[in-house]
Amino acid sequence: FLAISWIFHPSVVDFGQLTHFRHVNGSGFFSPSYGHGWLTISIAFSFLLTWNVIAMEAAACYIGETRDPDRDAKIAMNLEGGYGVFIYTLIPVAFVIVLGLHALGNASLADPKTMFITFGAKVFGASSASTALDDLIAIMLILALILSALNAITGTARSLHQMSYDGHFPKFFSRVNSHGVPGHSMAFNVVCSIIVVFMGGAVQIYTFSNVGYLFSFIPVLIGYFLLRQMRPNVRRPYRLPEWMKYLALVIAGIYAVVYVWGGPVYANCACNAAGKKTLPYYFIGIGTLLSYAIFWWYRKYVEDKRAAPPSAEERGERGAAVSAAGGGGP
Image (cartoon, rainbow, N blue to C red; front, side, top):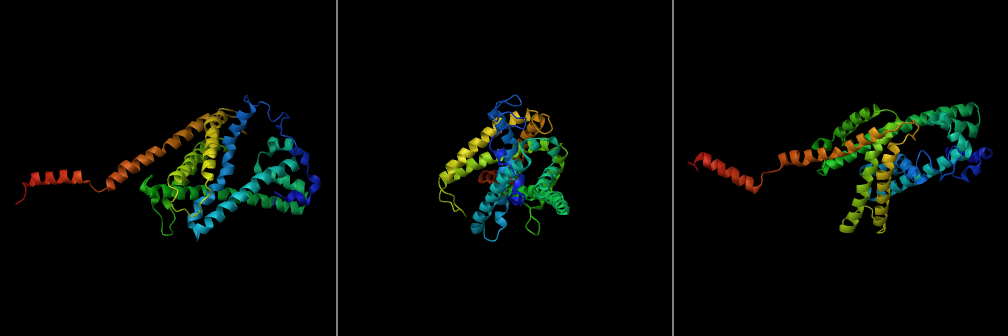
């Protein structure tokens, strides 16, 4: 509603704010900033912000729980994608045309609650109704944070469960409770989330978490291309057009540039809201990402080897040893 609320009070709108692309200090969009050219700094901030856009994929984590995944997959993903386009287009536009570019550069509006309340007050004015709207905005932001935390725990738990089920992660993560919920994976996520909270503020956490999150989409998109290319006849609940496999490679390439180029630049630049470099958290993220190899190794070479039946060669050697020890029989 806030994204389109300005249409009820058009006098507070200035569409002229959309006719130019300037930084909050008045310099042109293509001007160098923070010691980097416009393209480099844009890619660096893409490393920070891209997760907002691709986070719409979270709907895919729950498709398996729908009544008819074959039918509901297309509906869920299209609705989620459309909602994301709507929100991430109209909310920024609404804030720019109502508050103005310079107001958005004010450090006092860095807090989301303050920004939304300021926006609501300008659109609806100061009244008892506006006060009620302020309270409603605060409640909705709290609920959004709770939903975000819930999705980070439950959605990721489904991924860990699937990885374990497919034989790539320890069996601990494949266990489910009586309701079919991967409780062990959720408990693991809760512990990890608590550790991440103590890393610092949003700037540090975003740098750390984006190292793993953004990287995960590169092999996924390449894998999609390979599956469509090498196994075209495998049954799929919903099949995208053939040209989408090539688009997947293009998107993977864009993400790779943002990851390899933008990530280190952003982490080594004091251009964030905290004004601090976050390079240590970038490398902590790299270390956390590489830890996957440890979990994979444990599953393949410890758990699977322990559970695997003895090979014919091993059975033959064992039988020979038993025969030698027993003297070949009575």
